[in-house]
Image 1 (tube, rainbow, N blue to C red):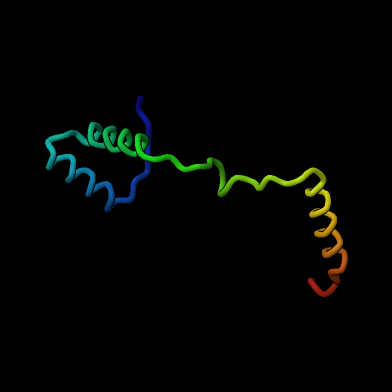
Image 2 (image 1 turned 180 degrees about the vertical axis):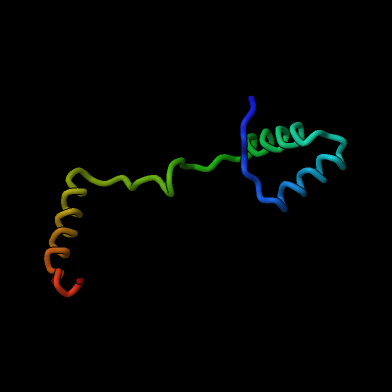
Length: 80
């Protein structure tokens, strides 16, 4: 499969040099590098930036009520 990936210039030059030093094409070198990276240890979570916390039933409503209460005390005119 063909794709386009942006790689910082310095990293590209390093990869190209490393591939040449090993007698590999850049394509083979990058494929092996990706395979090695994917074979390594995986993160315990996925998603951005961390998984959401597990909240007790009704906790979201309580938190939102606290936030709403605090924002209701803000003087809108003072923020203009």
